[in-house]
Image 1: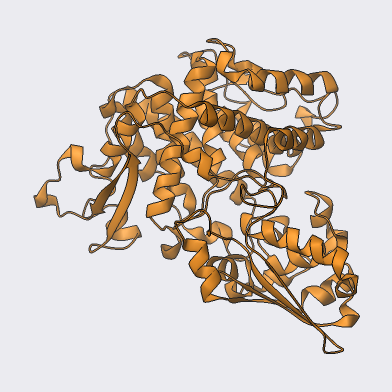
Image 2 (image 1 turned 90 degrees about the vertical axis):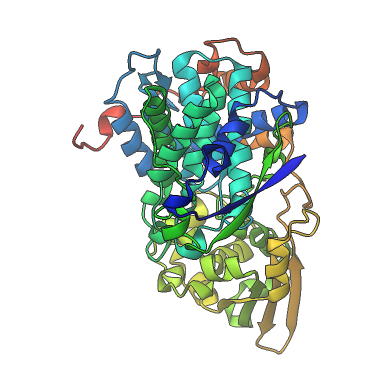
Length: 506
């Protein structure tokens, strides 16, 4: 069963024993050789497919083009054969493959999510773990075990420790989880994983300004940087280099000065020895390319588009009030007080974090598209701008309570919408979870993951290559040592022009 670990700040003279430190306990979980269950293995395959879907759809977006160009200047290193970069055949150093592929996976904000005390995209663990696996010639089973650990640590940290309250970016949980996953993959000992986790956390704490105001392209790079640091941290730890100790609990450590302070107290759940790692089963992916807290609202907007077409015309609408959780209101709603969330010329990254914009477009179109719904001509359409500016959000205590509920049956990421028409008619509707959520109207299963990949790869990847990749992913548990290159995807001829990449320092 899961054991809850009490975590607090210790003064230096208290000399907290290593085995009582959170990073050490995480390392013990990572080093546990427990088998991965069939259902977790199946879900790992789903998420490998999911990550590939969104990475392929991003191949020619500017952040990916730049990150890929950087990676290609760093060839394979001596410790292995190198790692593959999505879309091309060339091999690069594993930390740079983690970087380029991490950006590709994250750019469209279209892969899996877990929300609790903090936010996360656990699928961000896969690029660095896969890159190391390809570099050293690991097997499919090795990779599955590493990914299961990455998800386990990420989810449990997100359940227990809130970063965003202190304006620390959520990738601070990703560095340690990816380092732990790499430790499991490589079969490292507890001490080495412990040092790797400490270094990964120490180098990946940054502010949330990357997700505030005019959101920049760094939003896609932030988790890729954490993954790259996890790879480098593992390398340093394997060479005997140590990390700040205790990294979480020290009086000058992360908790004391970046989080809840010297009087902080957290309870972190972790599996006991021999307990299977199944946290991936609590996570959920996206049907739509938008911030996760917008997923349910897109589905509700599509429903209203069909049932109440009159609400799509701003001439008929007096106001649109969205009652939702604290997180949704203050992060992607009007409670953020970001004027950019109502700006027709805002960046795609900003519109992706604007529920007033997203709800308006989905309401008018009855659909959502990862490119078309963000196009400048779509965002500047006069009737859209007019309706968009009538949409506001407010926190509803009950939806906030359900958002934070530990009961998966009542945990919710939606809310209630009240649309008031100019003739006095009031239309009210609500949604708790997205249609694709495990408890939603149309839960995602393998069929949906495969369809998502086929849809996003169409026109970018040859049909034969689509089939080859899907077949390789499906037999991930059977892939032998050295066969994980099969999980890379080759873009169709002419899709990627490496010569057109921007020039930099490297």
